[in-house]
Image (cartoon, rainbow, N blue to C red):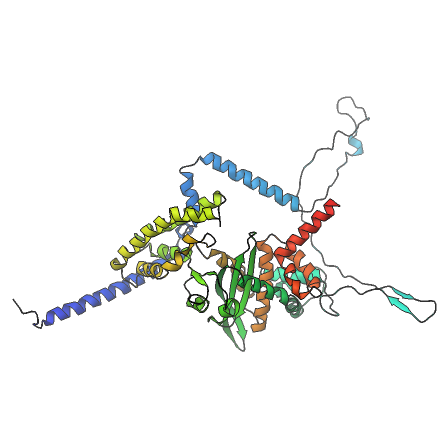
Length: 503
């Protein structure tokens, strides 16, 4: 028997080989995961993509509920939605008279025919092409008989002094680019088809002039969001045209939900992804910040800033990507689905963001989290740290405190999907108009994106809204500028309509 302090070269060599095998195994697992992900994205069927939480919950519910009843309820909901939409559409009654040669009774031949009720009614939807018009404004001029005095009618209100384009025209330009992701050169072609001479450079000037006029509103919108208790945030890259090359810029979104359930969505553009933008928008504020694991938000979170809230959608994506090489990741996906099932129960019962919602989370979500945490601790030593499952386990464990804060506060969501959805318009625009011309152009685009997105999130037609506030914002008291934000504007319009009906 060798003494304990006896030098064994073969033992040291075995340890080195063991470490090397572990390193190679981790690299192999990483490569296998990357290959599986790449093959799924390039060659995989749609069914191989990660299913949404809602679809999985529906599939599970179908096994325990009456499928016919669910289908009937869904059909009724679609009919009600269609009926609401139909009431919103402009309606014109088109009357069809019986032709003279047919005005005789098919039974007795009499021509003494009288209307029977209101007639037979049917509905047809038709497209009435939009059009541009050239308005010639003539201001009346009155002269006094004394020959000394002249009175002139007021000039029409203009968004820009001596501008040739009205607020409705500018609202159409902004909505076409920000809501429909239409490049300005394509919009110029469409406007020319409508009979208005137009160039892309002129539309670009009009777009940026509109942004400058509405700057007080987009600035105030971001300030209202920063003052909220719970804020969602995310960012996406945007290419910026520089001298002879492209630069990488970023469009950031910050959003919140009011107590009345209205969504406020703001954007900010920057040439970098550093923490400068979060600090500019949220610096010095308190509350909760719902974000992913990106460290750029650390500057505005604990210990002196906002409490960071994690995103379970990001965790779920990582475990799904690990499935091809580690089938045991399915257990984590089942745990996460159980968390979303609790949220669906609260939503169906109308308990969202109430004390009852918090109690439901503590009763049902907390035990799921405890079991999931134990599973994470058990699985971590069994998988290479650089493999897909190892990275998913590490991500969940590092973010655990942020991921579990929702249990004690009903206002906090499970994921950051709201802010990711707010960036989809920007992603579509990035594919269509490819880049922004310079930093100031990016800032103007962000400000207009914010107003249009907030309109759409609150059921406001952005063209109607912009056509109204483009004129009003210039004379509205700055201390009450918040009254012209989309959600407040909607309330004022509803109140005015109610007063007109009451009178």
